[in-house]
Length: 256
Length: 356
Image 1 (cartoon, rainbow over the protein chains, first blue to last red):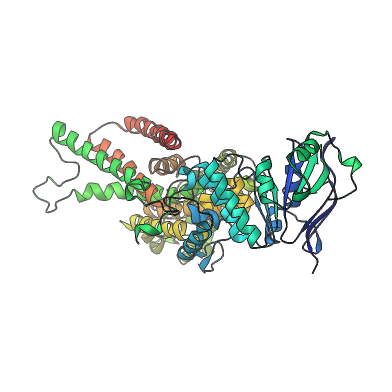
Image 2 (cartoon, rainbow over the protein chains, first blue to last red):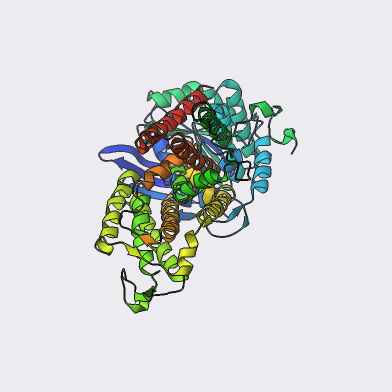
Protein backbone atom coordinates (compact mmCIF):
# COMPACT_ATOMS: atom_id res chain seq x y z
CA UNK A 1 0.00 0.00 0.00
CA UNK A 2 1.30 3.38 -0.96
CA UNK A 3 2.37 5.89 1.63
CA UNK A 4 0.37 8.60 -0.12
CA UNK A 5 -3.32 9.04 0.73
CA UNK A 6 -4.09 11.99 -1.54
CA UNK A 7 -2.35 13.39 -4.56
CA UNK A 8 -3.48 15.98 -7.07
CA UNK A 9 -1.73 16.43 -10.41
CA UNK A 10 -2.19 19.63 -12.35
CA UNK A 11 -5.53 20.32 -10.65
CA UNK A 12 -7.04 23.40 -12.31
CA UNK A 13 -10.30 25.29 -11.94
CA UNK A 14 -11.43 28.20 -14.10
CA UNK A 15 -14.55 30.24 -13.41
CA UNK A 16 -15.06 31.70 -16.85
CA UNK A 17 -11.81 33.53 -17.44
CA UNK A 18 -10.76 33.57 -13.80
CA UNK A 19 -8.08 31.04 -12.91
CA UNK A 20 -9.15 30.29 -9.35
CA UNK A 21 -6.85 27.30 -9.18
CA UNK A 22 -3.92 26.71 -11.48
CA UNK A 23 -1.95 23.51 -11.89
CA UNK A 24 -2.02 22.44 -8.25
CA UNK A 25 0.31 19.52 -7.48
CA UNK A 26 -0.25 18.38 -3.94
CA UNK A 27 0.67 15.32 -1.92
CA UNK A 28 -0.66 14.21 1.46
CA UNK A 29 0.85 11.21 3.25
CA UNK A 30 -0.94 8.87 5.58
CA UNK A 31 -1.17 10.26 9.08
CA UNK A 32 0.14 13.64 7.97
CA UNK A 33 -1.48 16.92 9.01
CA UNK A 34 -1.09 19.70 6.47
CA UNK A 35 -2.24 23.31 6.72
CA UNK A 36 -3.23 25.33 3.70
CA UNK A 37 -2.67 29.05 4.15
CA UNK A 38 -3.00 32.02 1.86
CA UNK A 39 -4.71 35.33 1.43
CA UNK A 40 -8.42 35.64 0.71
CA UNK A 41 -9.11 34.47 -2.82
CA UNK A 42 -5.82 32.60 -3.06
CA UNK A 43 -7.65 29.42 -4.05
CA UNK A 44 -7.63 27.51 -0.76
CA UNK A 45 -11.34 26.84 -0.61
CA UNK A 46 -11.50 26.28 -4.35
CA UNK A 47 -8.84 23.60 -3.99
CA UNK A 48 -10.86 21.84 -1.28
CA UNK A 49 -14.07 22.10 -3.27
CA UNK A 50 -12.43 20.26 -6.18
CA UNK A 51 -11.20 17.43 -3.94
CA UNK A 52 -14.60 16.98 -2.28
CA UNK A 53 -16.41 17.29 -5.62
CA UNK A 54 -18.56 20.21 -4.49
CA UNK A 55 -17.42 21.64 -7.83
CA UNK A 56 -16.12 19.98 -10.97
CA UNK A 57 -12.49 20.74 -11.77
CA UNK A 58 -11.55 22.06 -15.20
CA UNK A 59 -8.57 19.75 -15.62
CA UNK A 60 -6.10 17.67 -13.70
CA UNK A 61 -6.22 14.42 -11.75
CA UNK A 62 -7.03 13.43 -8.20
CA UNK A 63 -5.59 10.24 -6.75
CA UNK A 64 -7.07 9.11 -3.49
CA UNK A 65 -6.06 6.04 -1.54
CA UNK A 66 -4.14 4.56 -4.43
CA UNK A 67 -6.59 5.08 -7.27
CA UNK A 68 -7.49 7.81 -9.72
CA UNK A 69 -10.87 9.11 -8.57
CA UNK A 70 -13.53 11.20 -10.27
CA UNK A 71 -16.18 11.84 -7.61
CA UNK A 72 -19.58 12.73 -8.96
CA UNK A 73 -20.76 14.61 -5.86
CA UNK A 74 -19.74 15.31 -2.24
CA UNK A 75 -21.62 12.23 -1.11
CA UNK A 76 -19.43 9.97 -3.22
CA UNK A 77 -16.34 11.66 -1.84
CA UNK A 78 -17.64 11.08 1.65
CA UNK A 79 -18.44 7.47 0.96
CA UNK A 80 -14.88 7.03 -0.27
CA UNK A 81 -13.70 8.23 3.16
CA UNK A 82 -13.22 12.00 2.85
CA UNK A 83 -14.98 13.87 5.66
CA UNK A 84 -15.28 17.64 5.35
CA UNK A 85 -16.21 20.43 7.74
CA UNK A 86 -17.40 23.20 5.46
CA UNK A 87 -17.00 26.89 6.09
CA UNK A 88 -20.76 27.21 6.14
CA UNK A 89 -22.03 24.80 8.74
CA UNK A 90 -23.74 21.80 7.26
CA UNK A 91 -26.09 21.33 10.20
CA UNK A 92 -29.86 21.24 10.43
CA UNK A 93 -30.85 23.78 13.09
CA UNK A 94 -34.13 22.15 14.01
CA UNK A 95 -32.68 18.74 14.74
CA UNK A 96 -31.05 17.64 17.99
CA UNK A 97 -27.41 16.68 18.33
CA UNK A 98 -27.65 12.93 17.61
CA UNK A 99 -29.81 13.55 14.54
CA UNK A 100 -27.26 15.99 13.20
CA UNK A 101 -24.35 13.66 13.86
CA UNK A 102 -26.06 10.84 12.02
CA UNK A 103 -27.71 12.97 9.33
CA UNK A 104 -27.78 10.94 6.13
CA UNK A 105 -26.29 7.83 7.77
CA UNK A 106 -28.82 6.98 10.43
CA UNK A 107 -28.68 3.72 12.35
CA UNK A 108 -31.73 1.52 12.04
CA UNK A 109 -33.51 -1.05 14.12
CA UNK A 110 -35.56 -2.28 11.21
CA UNK A 111 -34.93 -1.64 7.53
CA UNK A 112 -38.06 -0.68 5.59
CA UNK A 113 -36.72 1.50 2.78
CA UNK A 114 -37.50 5.16 3.42
CA UNK A 115 -39.64 4.17 6.40
CA UNK A 116 -36.83 2.34 8.19
CA UNK A 117 -37.19 2.55 11.96
CA UNK A 118 -34.47 4.63 13.57
CA UNK A 119 -32.34 3.22 16.37
CA UNK A 120 -32.44 6.39 18.45
CA UNK A 121 -30.86 4.83 21.53
CA UNK A 122 -27.77 3.62 19.70
CA UNK A 123 -27.35 6.94 17.86
CA UNK A 124 -27.65 8.81 21.13
CA UNK A 125 -25.09 6.63 22.90
CA UNK A 126 -22.56 6.92 20.09
CA UNK A 127 -23.13 10.68 20.02
CA UNK A 128 -22.31 10.98 23.69
CA UNK A 129 -19.15 8.96 23.14
CA UNK A 130 -18.07 11.03 20.14
CA UNK A 131 -18.70 14.32 21.94
CA UNK A 132 -16.94 13.28 25.13
CA UNK A 133 -13.62 13.26 23.28
CA UNK A 134 -14.19 16.87 22.28
CA UNK A 135 -14.77 18.16 25.83
CA UNK A 136 -17.52 20.38 24.46
CA UNK A 137 -20.11 21.58 26.94
CA UNK A 138 -23.68 20.93 25.85
CA UNK A 139 -26.46 21.23 28.42
CA UNK A 140 -28.88 18.91 26.65
CA UNK A 141 -28.13 16.96 23.50
CA UNK A 142 -31.86 16.40 22.96
CA UNK A 143 -32.51 20.10 22.29
CA UNK A 144 -32.45 21.39 18.73
CA UNK A 145 -29.07 22.89 17.97
CA UNK A 146 -30.73 26.18 16.99
CA UNK A 147 -30.39 27.32 20.59
CA UNK A 148 -26.70 26.51 20.90
CA UNK A 149 -23.73 28.84 20.65
CA UNK A 150 -21.54 29.02 17.58
CA UNK A 151 -18.82 27.09 19.36
CA UNK A 152 -21.12 24.30 20.44
CA UNK A 153 -22.48 23.99 16.93
CA UNK A 154 -19.03 23.96 15.40
CA UNK A 155 -18.00 21.27 17.87
CA UNK A 156 -20.98 19.20 16.81
CA UNK A 157 -20.01 19.64 13.16
CA UNK A 158 -16.42 18.69 13.86
CA UNK A 159 -17.32 15.84 16.16
CA UNK A 160 -19.42 14.49 13.33
CA UNK A 161 -16.43 14.60 11.04
CA UNK A 162 -14.09 13.13 13.61
CA UNK A 163 -16.49 10.39 14.63
CA UNK A 164 -16.87 9.08 11.11
CA UNK A 165 -13.40 9.92 9.83
CA UNK A 166 -12.00 6.98 8.02
CA UNK A 167 -9.32 8.11 5.59
CA UNK A 168 -9.09 11.89 5.34
CA UNK A 169 -10.48 14.91 7.15
CA UNK A 170 -10.71 18.35 5.59
CA UNK A 171 -11.54 21.43 7.69
CA UNK A 172 -12.15 24.82 6.11
CA UNK A 173 -11.46 27.50 8.74
CA UNK A 174 -13.04 25.53 11.58
CA UNK A 175 -12.32 28.15 14.24
CA UNK A 176 -13.00 31.32 12.26
CA UNK A 177 -16.07 32.29 14.29
CA UNK A 178 -15.11 30.86 17.66
CA UNK A 179 -14.00 32.25 21.00
CA UNK A 180 -10.76 31.34 22.75
CA UNK A 181 -12.10 28.45 24.76
CA UNK A 182 -14.07 27.00 21.88
CA UNK A 183 -11.06 27.27 19.61
CA UNK A 184 -9.08 25.26 22.15
CA UNK A 185 -11.73 22.55 22.06
CA UNK A 186 -11.56 22.32 18.30
CA UNK A 187 -7.77 22.15 18.43
CA UNK A 188 -8.05 19.30 20.90
CA UNK A 189 -10.21 17.37 18.47
CA UNK A 190 -7.56 17.93 15.80
CA UNK A 191 -4.82 16.61 18.10
CA UNK A 192 -7.00 13.58 18.71
CA UNK A 193 -7.12 12.94 14.97
CA UNK A 194 -3.33 13.17 14.82
CA UNK A 195 -3.03 10.57 17.59
CA UNK A 196 -5.37 8.27 15.74
CA UNK A 197 -3.28 8.73 12.59
CA UNK A 198 -6.11 10.29 10.57
CA UNK A 199 -4.64 12.61 7.92
CA UNK A 200 -5.92 16.19 7.85
CA UNK A 201 -6.03 19.17 5.54
CA UNK A 202 -6.62 22.31 7.60
CA UNK A 203 -7.40 25.64 6.03
CA UNK A 204 -6.66 28.42 8.48
CA UNK A 205 -5.74 32.07 8.72
CA UNK A 206 -4.37 31.59 12.19
CA UNK A 207 -0.61 31.02 11.93
CA UNK A 208 -0.22 30.36 15.65
CA UNK A 209 -2.74 27.56 15.30
CA UNK A 210 -1.11 26.25 12.16
CA UNK A 211 2.33 26.03 13.78
CA UNK A 212 0.76 24.38 16.84
CA UNK A 213 -1.09 21.68 15.00
CA UNK A 214 0.32 20.57 11.68
CA UNK A 215 3.44 18.95 10.21
CA UNK A 216 3.62 20.85 6.96
CA UNK A 217 2.36 24.15 5.62
CA UNK A 218 1.32 24.71 2.02
CA UNK A 219 0.99 28.30 0.84
CA UNK A 220 -1.45 29.32 -1.88
CA UNK A 221 -1.13 32.57 -3.75
CA UNK A 222 -3.24 33.70 -6.68
CA UNK A 223 -4.52 30.19 -7.40
CA UNK A 224 -1.09 28.56 -7.31
CA UNK A 225 0.81 26.58 -4.72
CA UNK A 226 3.88 28.71 -4.06
CA UNK A 227 5.46 26.88 -1.13
CA UNK A 228 5.34 23.69 0.87
CA UNK A 229 7.37 23.94 4.05
CA UNK A 230 7.96 21.59 6.94
CA UNK A 231 6.97 23.25 10.17
CA UNK A 232 10.43 22.83 11.67
CA UNK A 233 12.18 24.46 8.74
CA UNK A 234 10.22 27.68 8.60
CA UNK A 235 8.74 30.42 10.77
CA UNK A 236 5.88 32.88 10.73
CA UNK A 237 7.75 35.59 8.87
CA UNK A 238 8.76 33.18 6.17
CA UNK A 239 5.17 32.04 5.67
CA UNK A 240 3.89 35.62 5.60
CA UNK A 241 6.41 36.53 2.90
CA UNK A 242 5.10 33.70 0.74
CA UNK A 243 1.49 34.67 1.41
CA UNK A 244 2.06 38.30 0.48
CA UNK A 245 4.32 37.50 -2.46
CA UNK A 246 7.52 39.01 -1.10
CA UNK A 247 8.99 35.57 -1.64
CA UNK A 248 7.73 33.60 -4.60
CA UNK A 249 7.77 29.93 -5.36
CA UNK A 250 9.75 30.50 -8.51
CA UNK A 251 13.18 30.45 -6.88
CA UNK A 252 12.45 27.30 -4.94
CA UNK A 253 12.67 23.78 -6.30
CA UNK A 254 9.42 22.29 -7.56
CA UNK A 255 7.55 20.60 -4.75
CA UNK A 256 4.26 20.10 -2.97
CA UNK B 1 -33.71 8.47 32.52
CA UNK B 2 -31.43 10.30 34.90
CA UNK B 3 -30.68 13.92 34.24
CA UNK B 4 -26.97 13.27 33.98
CA UNK B 5 -27.37 11.53 30.65
CA UNK B 6 -28.63 14.66 28.86
CA UNK B 7 -25.72 17.01 29.28
CA UNK B 8 -22.08 16.94 28.36
CA UNK B 9 -18.94 18.48 29.74
CA UNK B 10 -20.01 18.75 33.35
CA UNK B 11 -23.01 20.96 32.67
CA UNK B 12 -25.93 20.03 34.88
CA UNK B 13 -29.07 19.23 33.00
CA UNK B 14 -31.70 21.68 34.14
CA UNK B 15 -35.25 20.44 33.51
CA UNK B 16 -36.49 24.03 33.74
CA UNK B 17 -34.40 24.96 30.73
CA UNK B 18 -35.80 22.17 28.62
CA UNK B 19 -37.31 23.46 25.39
CA UNK B 20 -41.04 23.57 26.02
CA UNK B 21 -42.84 21.51 23.43
CA UNK B 22 -44.73 23.67 20.97
CA UNK B 23 -47.75 21.39 21.25
CA UNK B 24 -48.24 22.44 24.86
CA UNK B 25 -48.75 26.07 23.80
CA UNK B 26 -51.25 24.99 21.16
CA UNK B 27 -53.09 22.87 23.70
CA UNK B 28 -53.26 25.81 26.12
CA UNK B 29 -54.65 27.96 23.29
CA UNK B 30 -57.28 25.32 22.58
CA UNK B 31 -58.36 25.26 26.21
CA UNK B 32 -58.47 29.06 26.38
CA UNK B 33 -60.64 29.29 23.28
CA UNK B 34 -63.06 26.69 24.63
CA UNK B 35 -63.23 28.55 27.97
CA UNK B 36 -63.85 31.84 26.15
CA UNK B 37 -66.82 30.40 24.25
CA UNK B 38 -68.13 28.84 27.46
CA UNK B 39 -67.93 32.14 29.33
CA UNK B 40 -69.46 34.21 26.52
CA UNK B 41 -72.21 31.62 26.12
CA UNK B 42 -73.09 31.62 29.83
CA UNK B 43 -73.01 35.42 30.06
CA UNK B 44 -74.89 36.41 26.93
CA UNK B 45 -76.88 33.39 25.82
CA UNK B 46 -77.48 31.64 29.10
CA UNK B 47 -76.32 28.45 27.40
CA UNK B 48 -73.27 26.24 27.79
CA UNK B 49 -70.84 25.60 24.94
CA UNK B 50 -69.36 22.44 26.34
CA UNK B 51 -71.78 20.98 28.80
CA UNK B 52 -75.19 19.47 28.41
CA UNK B 53 -77.95 21.81 29.57
CA UNK B 54 -80.99 19.95 28.37
CA UNK B 55 -82.87 18.09 31.09
CA UNK B 56 -84.16 15.39 28.79
CA UNK B 57 -80.67 14.17 27.79
CA UNK B 58 -78.63 12.27 30.32
CA UNK B 59 -75.04 13.35 29.62
CA UNK B 60 -72.49 15.62 31.26
CA UNK B 61 -71.12 17.06 28.03
CA UNK B 62 -72.92 18.33 25.00
CA UNK B 63 -71.89 15.24 23.04
CA UNK B 64 -73.78 16.30 19.94
CA UNK B 65 -71.72 19.49 19.65
CA UNK B 66 -68.46 17.77 20.48
CA UNK B 67 -68.95 15.07 17.86
CA UNK B 68 -69.86 17.69 15.27
CA UNK B 69 -66.67 19.61 16.07
CA UNK B 70 -64.53 16.52 15.50
CA UNK B 71 -66.53 15.26 12.54
CA UNK B 72 -66.41 18.51 10.61
CA UNK B 73 -62.62 18.81 10.87
CA UNK B 74 -61.73 15.16 10.37
CA UNK B 75 -61.90 15.14 6.57
CA UNK B 76 -59.87 18.32 6.07
CA UNK B 77 -57.75 17.01 8.96
CA UNK B 78 -56.75 14.00 6.85
CA UNK B 79 -55.50 16.42 4.19
CA UNK B 80 -53.75 18.49 6.85
CA UNK B 81 -51.71 15.44 7.90
CA UNK B 82 -50.13 15.36 4.44
CA UNK B 83 -49.83 19.13 4.20
CA UNK B 84 -48.00 19.08 7.54
CA UNK B 85 -45.32 16.79 6.15
CA UNK B 86 -44.95 18.95 3.05
CA UNK B 87 -44.59 22.16 5.08
CA UNK B 88 -42.14 20.60 7.56
CA UNK B 89 -40.04 19.58 4.53
CA UNK B 90 -39.95 23.23 3.50
CA UNK B 91 -42.65 23.12 0.83
CA UNK B 92 -46.30 24.06 0.45
CA UNK B 93 -49.17 22.26 -1.24
CA UNK B 94 -51.97 24.36 -2.73
CA UNK B 95 -53.36 21.53 -4.82
CA UNK B 96 -54.92 19.30 -2.17
CA UNK B 97 -58.43 20.76 -2.43
CA UNK B 98 -58.51 20.25 -6.20
CA UNK B 99 -56.99 16.80 -5.87
CA UNK B 100 -59.88 15.98 -3.54
CA UNK B 101 -62.31 17.10 -6.25
CA UNK B 102 -60.61 15.19 -9.07
CA UNK B 103 -60.11 12.04 -7.01
CA UNK B 104 -63.69 12.07 -5.76
CA UNK B 105 -64.97 12.17 -9.34
CA UNK B 106 -62.79 9.32 -10.56
CA UNK B 107 -63.28 7.19 -7.46
CA UNK B 108 -67.05 7.59 -7.46
CA UNK B 109 -67.18 6.46 -11.10
CA UNK B 110 -65.90 3.07 -9.97
CA UNK B 111 -68.05 2.91 -6.85
CA UNK B 112 -71.48 3.16 -8.48
CA UNK B 113 -74.25 0.67 -8.06
CA UNK B 114 -76.08 -0.68 -11.11
CA UNK B 115 -79.63 -0.44 -9.85
CA UNK B 116 -81.18 2.43 -7.90
CA UNK B 117 -84.62 1.44 -6.56
CA UNK B 118 -84.87 -1.13 -9.33
CA UNK B 119 -84.04 1.37 -12.09
CA UNK B 120 -80.68 1.71 -13.85
CA UNK B 121 -78.34 4.19 -12.17
CA UNK B 122 -79.28 7.58 -13.66
CA UNK B 123 -75.82 9.01 -12.99
CA UNK B 124 -73.89 6.10 -14.53
CA UNK B 125 -70.50 7.11 -15.92
CA UNK B 126 -69.28 3.80 -17.32
CA UNK B 127 -71.10 0.75 -18.60
CA UNK B 128 -72.16 -2.28 -16.63
CA UNK B 129 -68.57 -3.48 -16.21
CA UNK B 130 -67.89 -0.67 -13.72
CA UNK B 131 -70.97 -1.29 -11.61
CA UNK B 132 -71.07 -2.93 -8.17
CA UNK B 133 -67.32 -3.45 -8.05
CA UNK B 134 -65.78 -4.58 -4.76
CA UNK B 135 -65.01 -1.59 -2.55
CA UNK B 136 -61.29 -2.20 -2.92
CA UNK B 137 -61.40 -1.15 -6.58
CA UNK B 138 -62.59 2.46 -6.13
CA UNK B 139 -60.38 2.78 -3.07
CA UNK B 140 -57.26 1.74 -4.97
CA UNK B 141 -58.19 3.80 -8.03
CA UNK B 142 -58.60 6.83 -5.76
CA UNK B 143 -55.28 6.34 -3.99
CA UNK B 144 -53.48 5.90 -7.31
CA UNK B 145 -55.05 9.16 -8.56
CA UNK B 146 -53.82 11.02 -5.51
CA UNK B 147 -50.35 9.52 -5.71
CA UNK B 148 -50.07 10.43 -9.41
CA UNK B 149 -51.00 14.05 -8.67
CA UNK B 150 -48.53 14.08 -5.78
CA UNK B 151 -45.70 12.57 -7.82
CA UNK B 152 -46.25 15.21 -10.52
CA UNK B 153 -46.11 17.94 -7.85
CA UNK B 154 -43.01 16.45 -6.25
CA UNK B 155 -41.21 15.88 -9.53
CA UNK B 156 -41.87 19.46 -10.62
CA UNK B 157 -40.61 20.82 -7.30
CA UNK B 158 -37.56 18.56 -7.09
CA UNK B 159 -36.30 18.50 -10.66
CA UNK B 160 -37.39 21.73 -12.32
CA UNK B 161 -36.59 23.75 -9.19
CA UNK B 162 -39.71 25.88 -9.57
CA UNK B 163 -41.07 27.00 -6.20
CA UNK B 164 -43.59 24.58 -4.65
CA UNK B 165 -46.07 27.45 -4.52
CA UNK B 166 -46.12 27.68 -8.32
CA UNK B 167 -45.95 23.95 -9.03
CA UNK B 168 -48.88 23.13 -6.78
CA UNK B 169 -50.81 26.20 -7.95
CA UNK B 170 -50.60 24.71 -11.43
CA UNK B 171 -51.85 21.37 -10.12
CA UNK B 172 -54.64 23.17 -8.25
CA UNK B 173 -56.01 24.71 -11.45
CA UNK B 174 -55.37 21.65 -13.62
CA UNK B 175 -56.94 19.15 -11.22
CA UNK B 176 -60.03 21.33 -10.83
CA UNK B 177 -60.33 21.53 -14.61
CA UNK B 178 -59.95 17.75 -14.79
CA UNK B 179 -62.75 17.17 -12.30
CA UNK B 180 -65.11 19.35 -14.37
CA UNK B 181 -64.09 17.61 -17.60
CA UNK B 182 -64.47 14.09 -16.18
CA UNK B 183 -68.29 14.09 -16.28
CA UNK B 184 -68.93 17.38 -18.08
CA UNK B 185 -69.67 18.98 -14.76
CA UNK B 186 -72.35 16.47 -13.77
CA UNK B 187 -72.39 15.02 -10.27
CA UNK B 188 -71.71 11.30 -9.88
CA UNK B 189 -73.93 9.56 -7.36
CA UNK B 190 -75.40 6.33 -5.97
CA UNK B 191 -72.43 4.39 -4.63
CA UNK B 192 -72.51 0.79 -3.52
CA UNK B 193 -73.39 0.11 0.08
CA UNK B 194 -69.90 -1.02 1.00
CA UNK B 195 -68.45 2.20 -0.41
CA UNK B 196 -71.02 4.30 1.44
CA UNK B 197 -69.95 2.59 4.67
CA UNK B 198 -66.48 4.20 4.54
CA UNK B 199 -67.77 7.63 5.52
CA UNK B 200 -70.81 6.64 7.54
CA UNK B 201 -71.43 8.16 10.97
CA UNK B 202 -68.25 8.71 12.92
CA UNK B 203 -66.11 6.67 10.51
CA UNK B 204 -64.31 9.82 9.20
CA UNK B 205 -63.19 10.54 12.76
CA UNK B 206 -61.92 7.00 13.26
CA UNK B 207 -60.01 7.15 9.96
CA UNK B 208 -58.56 10.57 10.83
CA UNK B 209 -57.41 9.43 14.27
CA UNK B 210 -55.89 6.20 12.91
CA UNK B 211 -54.00 8.08 10.20
CA UNK B 212 -52.85 10.71 12.68
CA UNK B 213 -51.39 8.04 14.96
CA UNK B 214 -49.78 6.26 12.01
CA UNK B 215 -48.14 9.42 10.67
CA UNK B 216 -47.14 10.61 14.11
CA UNK B 217 -45.10 7.40 14.41
CA UNK B 218 -43.76 7.78 10.87
CA UNK B 219 -42.61 11.36 11.56
CA UNK B 220 -41.07 10.47 14.93
CA UNK B 221 -39.50 7.07 14.46
CA UNK B 222 -38.54 6.65 10.81
CA UNK B 223 -35.81 7.88 8.52
CA UNK B 224 -38.45 9.54 6.33
CA UNK B 225 -39.67 11.65 9.26
CA UNK B 226 -36.15 12.62 10.26
CA UNK B 227 -35.39 13.65 6.69
CA UNK B 228 -38.55 15.79 6.53
CA UNK B 229 -37.20 17.92 9.37
CA UNK B 230 -33.66 17.89 7.97
CA UNK B 231 -34.66 18.99 4.47
CA UNK B 232 -37.00 21.67 5.79
CA UNK B 233 -34.44 22.91 8.28
CA UNK B 234 -31.41 23.19 6.00
CA UNK B 235 -31.76 21.74 2.53
CA UNK B 236 -28.14 22.42 1.66
CA UNK B 237 -26.92 20.57 4.75
CA UNK B 238 -29.27 17.69 4.04
CA UNK B 239 -27.88 17.40 0.53
CA UNK B 240 -24.27 17.58 1.72
CA UNK B 241 -25.01 14.94 4.33
CA UNK B 242 -25.98 12.55 1.62
CA UNK B 243 -29.76 12.70 1.86
CA UNK B 244 -31.34 12.28 -1.55
CA UNK B 245 -33.36 15.48 -1.26
CA UNK B 246 -35.06 15.07 -4.64
CA UNK B 247 -36.36 11.58 -3.88
CA UNK B 248 -37.51 12.80 -0.52
CA UNK B 249 -39.52 15.66 -2.03
CA UNK B 250 -41.25 13.36 -4.51
CA UNK B 251 -42.13 10.99 -1.67
CA UNK B 252 -43.49 13.77 0.56
CA UNK B 253 -45.75 15.15 -2.16
CA UNK B 254 -46.84 11.63 -3.15
CA UNK B 255 -47.92 10.93 0.44
CA UNK B 256 -49.71 14.28 0.63
CA UNK B 257 -51.52 13.42 -2.60
CA UNK B 258 -52.43 10.01 -1.23
CA UNK B 259 -53.87 11.55 1.93
CA UNK B 260 -55.88 14.08 -0.11
CA UNK B 261 -57.22 11.13 -2.11
CA UNK B 262 -58.20 9.33 1.10
CA UNK B 263 -60.03 12.46 2.21
CA UNK B 264 -61.82 12.45 -1.15
CA UNK B 265 -62.90 8.83 -0.67
CA UNK B 266 -64.23 9.55 2.82
CA UNK B 267 -65.94 12.76 1.73
CA UNK B 268 -67.64 11.32 -1.37
CA UNK B 269 -68.69 8.29 0.62
CA UNK B 270 -70.12 10.44 3.39
CA UNK B 271 -72.02 12.65 0.92
CA UNK B 272 -72.99 9.69 -1.30
CA UNK B 273 -72.00 11.80 -4.29
CA UNK B 274 -69.05 13.41 -6.02
CA UNK B 275 -69.16 16.87 -7.53
CA UNK B 276 -66.62 18.81 -9.52
CA UNK B 277 -66.64 21.59 -6.92
CA UNK B 278 -65.77 19.30 -4.03
CA UNK B 279 -62.91 20.35 -1.80
CA UNK B 280 -62.73 23.97 -2.91
CA UNK B 281 -60.60 25.92 -0.40
CA UNK B 282 -59.79 22.75 1.54
CA UNK B 283 -56.11 23.33 0.84
CA UNK B 284 -56.20 26.60 2.72
CA UNK B 285 -58.13 25.13 5.64
CA UNK B 286 -55.58 22.31 5.82
CA UNK B 287 -52.66 24.75 5.74
CA UNK B 288 -54.41 26.82 8.41
CA UNK B 289 -54.80 23.80 10.69
CA UNK B 290 -51.10 23.02 10.36
CA UNK B 291 -50.03 26.61 10.94
CA UNK B 292 -52.34 27.04 13.94
CA UNK B 293 -50.87 23.79 15.27
CA UNK B 294 -47.39 25.29 15.28
CA UNK B 295 -46.03 24.02 11.96
CA UNK B 296 -43.63 26.69 10.72
CA UNK B 297 -44.10 27.82 7.12
CA UNK B 298 -40.31 28.18 6.96
CA UNK B 299 -39.99 24.43 7.37
CA UNK B 300 -38.24 22.23 9.88
CA UNK B 301 -40.64 22.69 12.76
CA UNK B 302 -44.00 21.28 13.73
CA UNK B 303 -45.60 17.94 14.35
CA UNK B 304 -48.59 15.76 13.54
CA UNK B 305 -49.82 16.16 17.11
CA UNK B 306 -49.67 19.95 16.68
CA UNK B 307 -51.71 19.75 13.50
CA UNK B 308 -54.34 17.56 15.19
CA UNK B 309 -54.62 20.18 17.95
CA UNK B 310 -54.73 22.88 15.26
CA UNK B 311 -57.58 21.04 13.58
CA UNK B 312 -59.46 20.92 16.88
CA UNK B 313 -58.96 24.67 17.41
CA UNK B 314 -60.27 25.18 13.91
CA UNK B 315 -63.36 23.08 14.62
CA UNK B 316 -63.99 24.69 17.99
CA UNK B 317 -63.88 28.18 16.50
CA UNK B 318 -66.27 27.35 13.67
CA UNK B 319 -68.80 25.62 15.88
CA UNK B 320 -68.27 28.30 18.52
CA UNK B 321 -69.39 30.89 16.00
CA UNK B 322 -72.41 28.81 15.13
CA UNK B 323 -73.10 28.48 18.87
CA UNK B 324 -72.97 32.27 19.25
CA UNK B 325 -75.32 32.49 16.24
CA UNK B 326 -72.93 34.59 14.20
CA UNK B 327 -73.23 34.64 10.44
CA UNK B 328 -71.10 32.37 8.27
CA UNK B 329 -69.61 35.53 6.75
CA UNK B 330 -67.94 36.34 10.03
CA UNK B 331 -66.58 32.82 10.26
CA UNK B 332 -64.65 33.19 7.03
CA UNK B 333 -63.33 36.62 7.94
CA UNK B 334 -62.17 35.37 11.30
CA UNK B 335 -60.60 32.29 9.71
CA UNK B 336 -58.41 34.60 7.65
CA UNK B 337 -57.42 36.61 10.70
CA UNK B 338 -56.52 33.43 12.60
CA UNK B 339 -54.26 32.15 9.82
CA UNK B 340 -52.34 35.41 9.60
CA UNK B 341 -52.23 35.65 13.39
CA UNK B 342 -50.75 32.17 13.69
CA UNK B 343 -47.99 33.01 11.22
CA UNK B 344 -47.21 36.28 13.01
CA UNK B 345 -47.01 34.36 16.29
CA UNK B 346 -44.58 31.90 14.70
CA UNK B 347 -42.35 34.78 13.56
CA UNK B 348 -42.36 36.28 17.05
CA UNK B 349 -41.42 32.97 18.59
CA UNK B 350 -38.45 32.66 16.28
CA UNK B 351 -37.25 36.17 16.92
CA UNK B 352 -37.41 35.76 20.67
CA UNK B 353 -35.59 32.46 20.32
CA UNK B 354 -32.71 33.86 18.31
CA UNK B 355 -32.37 36.63 20.91
CA UNK B 356 -32.33 34.25 23.84
